[in-house]
Length: 266
Image 1 (tube, rainbow, N blue to C red):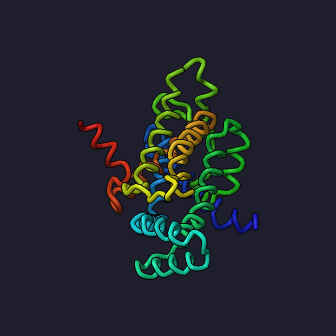
Image 2: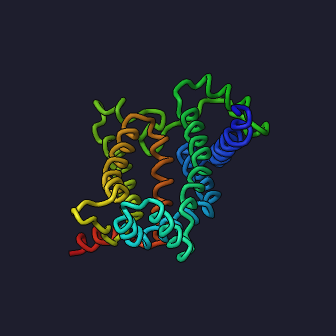
Image 3: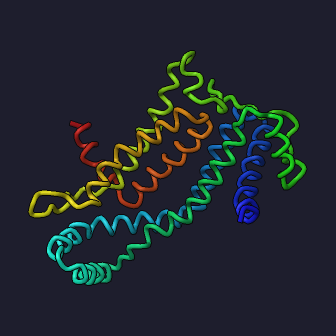
């Protein structure tokens, strides 16, 4: 499995990123590594576009029928079989496949993990080991690099983490803050604007409660990782998230972010 994973994902992504870096560097483009990471992320995002579009459309449909699902759960809470029958009937009526949102995510995860693995190598400070590994895996002779990769990007060192340089450059905390804010915006956009139906005792169902909690927990967690990991990985993640925001807006508009935008306008 390791060899298959390496052959189908790691090597193609590594060579694409390496090829972009070599081309940009040969044409004299400044900050070649940073821009190659951005371009590589865009390519990955475009390749995943059909899959992610399907996932977003499925999520939008699930949001639309969520109040009906809550009603069914409350109405048949003592009859699990009847509850499942009514839910399946509702899915069929609206043409919704509840598993459709999960399957695209399962396809994305290996690709995202591969990209993370590749970038971890590229921004590593162990230049000798990285150079040897990159040259060994290069598909073509022109892709091979003869000197350490230039990790500077607009005054930032893509190989360093904000936590490492925080004592001498406190402004680096803006990177994890930006990462968390962008993730919050995307998560908020994916939420429904329709309030969930509450049970007779005034409690929301587990799904609604979990979604509200994850709205804050996930961005904070991603921000913490961004503070601890190399800046190059934050550059990848933020590029990926920005395109996710644009994609989500195209599919479903501002979604749950709309009330926030209206408050800001006032």
